[in-house]
Image (cartoon, rainbow, N blue to C red):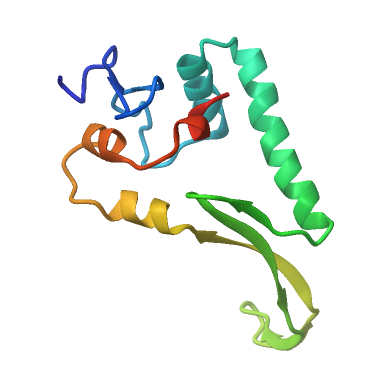
Length: 142
């Protein structure tokens, strides 16, 4: 099966979930939210509107949990948490003047072990990585 074939699908071993195999439509090496919505729509056979609601809900849930100071853990993918930055002395790059930088919280993502392994697998194609992945079948359920 050609991994560049946009119509091809490959079954994960031991699951009924089929992961579509296609070259990404990304042109600049990054995926936009619209492209993510498109991919969810294509994989799940949902309308783009429904897929957009799902993607927006996931993002909003993560943001709301971080705002409440909670940690979000997605097994096999990674975790989101807040890190506190202490106040410090900074420098205005234009004038060179010293400025006080207030304390703040910044979101931090820590990739999980399985995600790191999938990314660092011997390259070849996304198809072989997807086919050999040890992601549980229910992780792909929508």
